[in-house]
Image 1: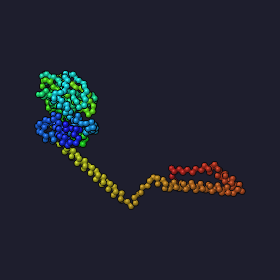
Image 2: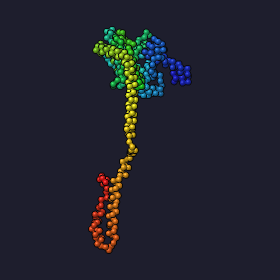
Image 3: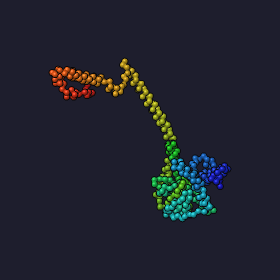
Image 4: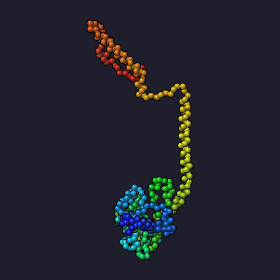
Length: 384
């Protein structure tokens, strides 16, 4: 009734829609609803809330933008469609019967849910019950648990978002008769900004589940398609924990160790911060001392070099040195004089046509082949 698509220019409807959306975000989340029942709106407002969207209430354009932001790494937490919750509460849903230990593989469309019921005996309730859903296609989904109301409808009591790990996405609920904890993955954006704080707060979201055991009777689960545009393919399986005594014992032991480690992290963070501050101080001092020592040594070298009466040498390039080399100039001038002398003698011998004897002497003294083969190439490797 108050949706912006139906009331584009109505500010009153827009404000009303925001109030309805805020109320729905509390009532549709069991954790927020419990906070509200305990402490009212103050607990909701003081708690750090992520952006939450009901994708079924968005139009195509807004859904596309939400998908793009999600792909870019912006954390967008989605909620179960209000239509699905209303149909469950009114009892206008189709429920499929599940048998313990028999997995079922199906495909659920986006923003819709498949409902399942399972009957357990008193003995099975004491041993514990585990419901797991996984998707080999890494589809995004929510695993939901509903409680039966007096009017025959179903109200949402627990929900688990699927988590991608290795080659599958999965979610599970464990009712084992002792406190079982749920762990929400921290966002990568805050961790990138302050990895130290992200490390010490990593176990803060390790909190106990609201329901630890189930009573004999019929219980209701649902798989909700949480993708933006496509359907989710999944396999759901409900088993009795009686066949897994070793796993049950290990889970209780590991979670006890995690709780101990969470308590130790608080003390370790204080020690780490103190040592890190001292290390930063020492590193800064180390850099300053190194710079001071380098400056003093350079100043000492300058003073040592000042003890001389000779002017400082000016460096010239190797190219200039080769051009001004005295040995090279001397060899070149010597060859030029030798070549000129030979040519002059030859011209003098050829200037007198009547003096045959002089010409013969000149030819004998300087044969043509000999003076044409005079080596003019300078060997630069030989010293002057």
